[in-house]
Image (cartoon, rainbow, N blue to C red; front, top):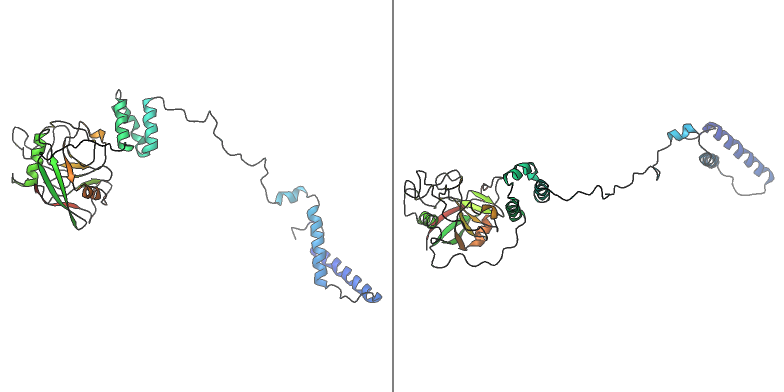
Amino acid sequence: MADIPGATFRALSRAAWEASRAETLAAKATAKTTQEAPSFLARTKETWASHRQQQRQAPTSSSSSAQAPTMATPAATKPPTISTPAETKAPATTMHDRVRAFYEEFNPTKLAEVDAVVRKHIGREAELFAKLRAKYCPAPPQDLAPLTTEAHPTVFFDITYRQQTHRVVMRLLDDVVPLAAENFRCLCTGEKGRGLHFKGSQFHRIITNFMIQGGDITKGDGTGGASIYANTPHGNAWGHFKDEHFLPHDRIGLLSLANKGKNTNTSQFFITTRAPLVHLDNKHVVFGQVVQGLDAVLAIERAATTAAGKPLPGHEAIIVDCGQI
């Protein structure tokens, strides 16, 4: 066998047999023992095992060691990698480095946009990081004074969601942003006619931990909208009306106007479900606040949606009734 250098198995077997036979004959001749001699098979195995043990203990040749399994020695074992001071990542020193480090920690999917973000905010680094911190690691909301009082106009939505109807009550800041407040109030009552009514419309865009958006009373998908100011001194032919005054998005439950840019307000709005949202400040007009039914708003924001925020079938939130209280 290849594992047994030296004598062959046949030779070993022959030697074992002859030794066993000689011992047996000698035992019978002297009659000094009554114990039965070991069998031929046992003797053969014993002799073979003894010879194999001797071969294992003997020094091996170069040819046999080449066939032996390779075993790692301590010297050959790769040491664990240990970071040295030279390998430690240096602190971010430039604006680009700081923005990249922020995205690496909070949103790696944005790393490809670092260059564009830095170019856009050159000279405004503090503003950029205020927006980033508000978006990705906002501070716990503080106790803020009520934004509205009972003297402000009060309106309501009855919203069906998951086969239940929820009432959401809102107050409007007609003393701060009268155009936005009056437009919203009239769309709740439907008093202007011509399809200018929130009833039957849905919240077409829902982003968890951000906001729920509705008010597209013409197309229902976020591409439309209208207002009571079309072809009036306050609006153009499409009903777009101006930005009046900007309040901070500093609490949840705020009503704010969605738009396509400066002075393009219509019927579309959103309700905030996280605060603060400083990246919306000075871009979207806050015009009211939810004062009852915020739990329903927070339930709707957890709706199952597509990646773009469109509610999946069975998760639509529809305004089935609305008006002024």
